[in-house]
Each structure stands twice: as structure tokens, then as C-alpha cells.
Amino acid sequence: MNLTATAYAPTAQDNYPYGAVDYYGRPLVAGDVAVDPSVIPLGTKLWVTGYSSPNLPPGGFLATADDTGGAIKGNRIDIFINASESQVSNFGIQQVKVYVLK
Image (cartoon, rainbow, N blue to C red):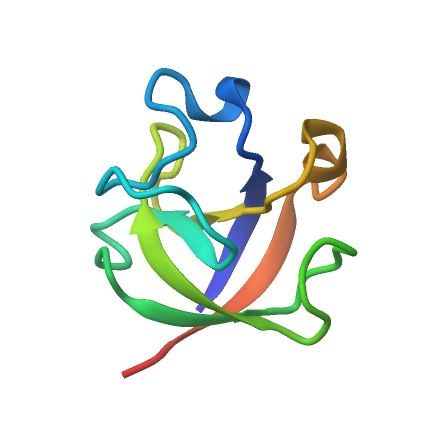
């Protein structure tokens, strides 16, 4: 799937009012992504590639669709990056390739 990606940090600004937890209430960890569950079901394992970020592994990473977000609708994902807000904001908006793993 070709999706639009943004990134979010563990800050209160990015996680209000729930805090830095995923949809299930577990602490956010590297590899968590927020999705629209009507496009990608929660719990789905994904391989995400095609991004440019010094805060993510080069070449791609294994992700789990464990979060949602009010702005995450349709063919979008929001990638959790455990870094400062200023570092995460440098991610911007990117087109990524996402493979659904079985």
C-alpha cells in the first residue's frame, strides 16, 4: 500500500488527553503506528519503508497497528517516534510504502 505518513512523539501535545499510550492503554514503543482501523485492522503487523528519517531504522521497520488518532483517516499512518517534539516534527508528511504481513 502507498500511504501518507506523519509522525508523533511521546509528548502531551501529541497524545492529549490520554498520554503516551496506544489504543489499548499500553505505553507507546518503537514500531507502533496509528492507523484508520477501517483500512488497516488494529493488531496488524506491517513492514514500513520508503521514508526519510534519522530517527527510524534505515531501509524499513517492522510496525504494529496498535494506535488510532482523530486525524488518521483513510490511507494514512502516524508513526510513533520516541524522540523530542522538534526531532519528530522534522519528519513532516511523507509518502511511504507499507506491506501488510501475514
